[in-house]
Length: 248
Length: 304
Image 1 (spheres, rainbow over the protein chains, first blue to last red):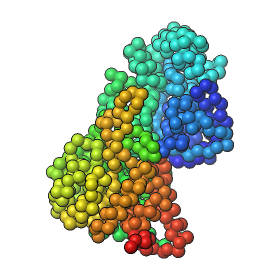
Image 2 (cartoon, rainbow over the protein chains, first blue to last red):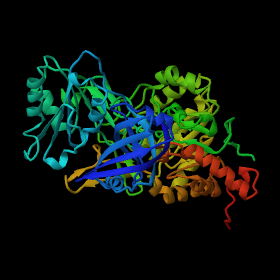
Image 3 (tube, rainbow over the protein chains, first blue to last red):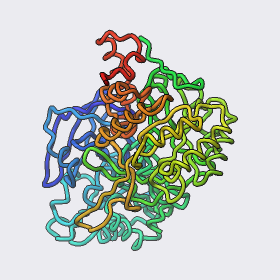
Image 4 (cartoon, each protein chain N blue to C red):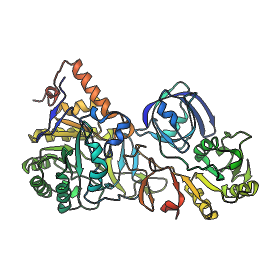
C-alpha cells in the first residue's frame, strides 16, 4: 500500500457512470487484485473508496468505474483527461479462487467492477457473470460478446426481465453447474436475496462501506462478524457470507 | 537546525510532530507511507486493560471540512498490545506514547500499573475526553474534581511521562489545565474532539448510530487554537496542540501561540503522509526565516 498520484488518461461516461483510466508511476499500485480498492481524492475532505476494475502492469494502467451518488463521486465523474489526483492503495483482500471450482459472479449496479476484474482472470468454461440493474442505465457495456454474461433488469429494457435471482437460475441451467460458488458485490438487499434463494452454495461477497482512511486505522468501516467487528478495508472487503452477522 | 523539544521527565522528541491517538492505529500501519523515524512520535489508539468491542455502526460521517466519529474506543487491550505490537514498535526510532483509558478510576490504574513495567513505552497519554462511551472517559474530563483525583492516583503509579488529554467540551479549559499541573501531570494535550451531531433529512434519521460523536478536522482548528493559547497562558507544563492540523502552516500556528509540540489527527486519514510533510514543512520554513532552533519559534507570538 502506498500514497501516490494518478494521471487521468481517458474517460468514458455512460448515464451516471464513468469509466476512468489512469496512468501511474507507482509500482505498488499496479499490484492490485480483484476486490482491491483505492482511496481516491475528490473535492471532499476524506478520500473515497473506489473498487479497481482493471489493472495492467505493462501499460501502468488502473481503471475504475465510478457511479455518481454524492459530492465526492460526482467530482470523480467530472474529472477531465490530463487531471491528476492523489490516491492511497491498493487496499483490501481478494476473492478465494481455486482452479477446479465453478463460479457465478453476481454484480448489482456499481458492484460490477471487482467481478469484471476477476472475470478476466478466470477460465471461460468455469464461470458466468450475472449483471443486474433497474434498467439499461445501470448496465454499463463493459463485457465483450465472448464473455459469458447474463444481464437482468427490472424494467426489462435490456437482458432478461427480472432480478439477479432469475439470472442465477438461468446461469445454473445453461452451464449445468452442480455446485457453483457465488461471488457477489452489490446492494445489501440483493446479497440477502441471493443468500435466501441459494443457501446451498458457498458464497463470498464484497462489501461496500463508508470509511475515513481505507488502510485500517480509523475503525469506521467495521462489520459485525461471528468473530466480532472486522474492518471492511483491510480484513475484507471480501467475506464468506456465513461469517457476517448481517446475513445470518 | 535543532528541532528537538523537551516535554519533561525524560520525554524528548526529535521534532515536535506526533500522530494523534485514534488516527494512527498502533503506528506500524504508517510505515507503508514513511519511516516512523521521520516524526517525533506516535500516540497509540486508546488502550484499556481488557479489549473493547466498540460502538455499533454507522460510526463515521463526513461534514463540512470535518468528520464525526463514534468508534467507542475499540481496541485490542493492553496485553495484546504488549505482545503483538510493542516488540516491533519499540524498535522504531520514534517516541511511543501509549494512550490509555478506563471506564472507572480502578481501570485507569490497572492499565497504567500493567504497562508501567514495559520498556519501549516512552509515556502515557491519559484519555479523559472521549465523548463516545457511556461511562468513564469524558466524565473524568469535564468534572475538575474527578480530573484531579485521577491524575493524582496515576502520578503515584508511574515514573513515565504523564500527559493528560483534555476535552474541549468544558466552559473553562484553564481550570482543567491547572488541575492537571497541580496534581503532577508532566504535560497536557488538547483538544480532543468536540461533541457533534448530524442528521439526514431524507431518512429523518441520525447519521451516527449513537446519535452524537466526536467532531474533528480542519473545521475545529480555530477553537483548538484558542483553547491551546488559553491553556499555555494558565500553566507552566508543556501544552501539546491538537485540532484540525492539516499542514505545516497549521502546526506552526499552534507552536507560535506556545504549544511545545503538536499532534496530527484527522489529516492522517485523508493524507497518510501528513506527518512527514509537516516535519519537512516546519524545517524549511525555519530555514527560510533563519531560525536555527524550533524552541525560538515556540511561543514567540507578539503578545502584550
